[in-house]
Image 1 (cartoon, rainbow, N blue to C red):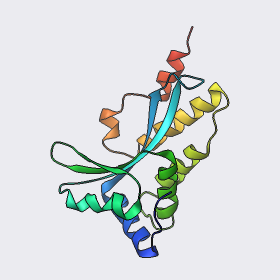
Image 2: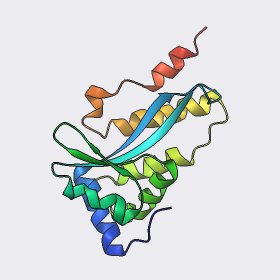
Image 3: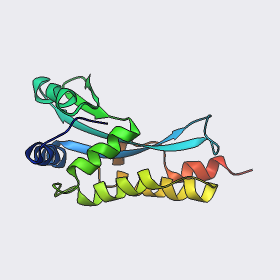
Length: 151
């Protein structure tokens, strides 16, 4: 997964994500899952100019570029790629150290029961509190999962 990165490249990526990136946990309905929900991580970096992010999938071997109205985003959604990227930046990140640690915890958690899923969703809620934009835009929360299980 991912391409080999030098220490300098790993530190640069950590700085880019510290400043212009987000580490998010998405709670999604998923009919194929035992408890009808899943928690999935996404890492992205947003810039105004395409050339500022276009090199990232080439250099790292993970993610893709998406154009929004006025910005371009490098998005990494594949869970193995997310874990690889977190491992690459973990020693170098500064402002997102807590998010990286929590994201790794989320990825390592196995869902064997409804209680496991609920705890995972609560960790996703905690991770979303670090992201300024998530506060206004996030729709799915741990409480939504609990409500769906009510008789």
